[in-house]
Length: 228
Image (cartoon, rainbow, N blue to C red; front, side):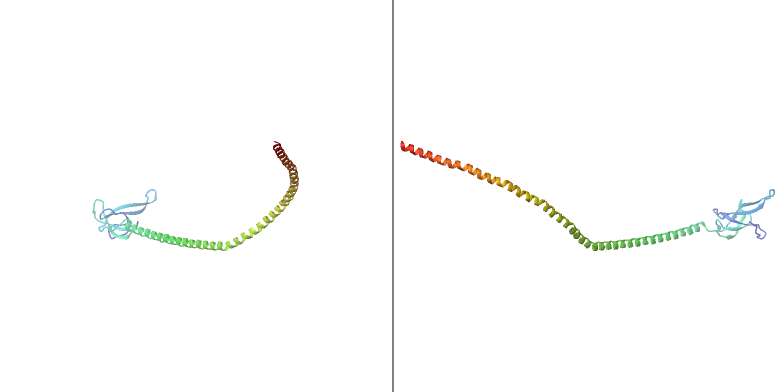
């Protein structure tokens, strides 16, 4: 850092690096010098303890210190002026907390908006689904009568062929049965009729013959009784 003239006293401009002590701060002063032998440009930092009567300096402040009488064993400087103030850690924390709170609020608002949008979409979807179900039910009700009309037609179309086939089968099957039955009756009945008279004729005469024999026996018995 370049030297600043402050009357007859030496001055330095540096940055406060420590402020934990009471009424004392540590100021880091940087200087650029060329090496005497190697001619290399080097940057060196020297730390000075400076007196701060009001404890106004904080870490990061850029201050001007002036040489003074010995105030303690290693304190020969005092803070003459604060050239630039750095943000205090507490203030930085407060600022960060405020920023974080704002971000959290924004996030909460965004989440609430998204939730409301999702609820609206869900309600719309439910309404659309209900409307679709109603339309489907109406369409089903409208489509049901044609189905009933088609069913009788299908029955009418299916029934006649069955009825036509059944009579044909009956007609085809019945006549042979009718023809066969009369023939069988004709063939079976006459012999029965013929046999019946023959049997009657064969059985009747013996019965008539038995009656005269009984009469003859009775007459013979009567004659014997009369003779006796």
